[in-house]
Length: 160
Image (cartoon, rainbow, N blue to C red):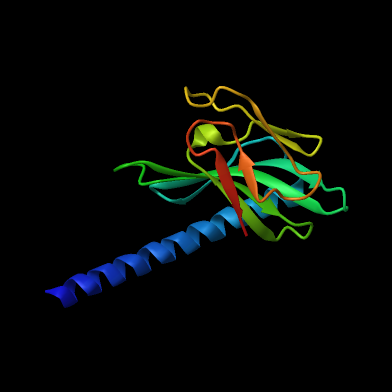
């Protein structure tokens, strides 16, 4: 019995991993096209499957004090739409060659930033635990952590 459960878990993990890789590929292709074409501040949607969708919005580029160019995209992935809808929300960062360099994983779509202006990312989360607007400055590079000033889960780590 233990062997059957193990095989089931192994196959489930492999299936999830393959779906995750396919989704990641769709998302990065979409984001790269948005950057290449300079499509700024417009939600763009791709459906990698009948029960999922990816929405990305390219905010533009950030230029650090050291001259580094970073492209910033807010994105979310919705899946299991017909059964139990689930959403992953991120802020993705790409280098000047449009290569993925890392991300901030946000708790919900409500935590995604509103806009980018003068190398600063502006957040205004609409819920009871987040009473302040937050501004994250990228002029000195990519912050290791961002604080969107909510009572719960204040600090969000940059994952490269």
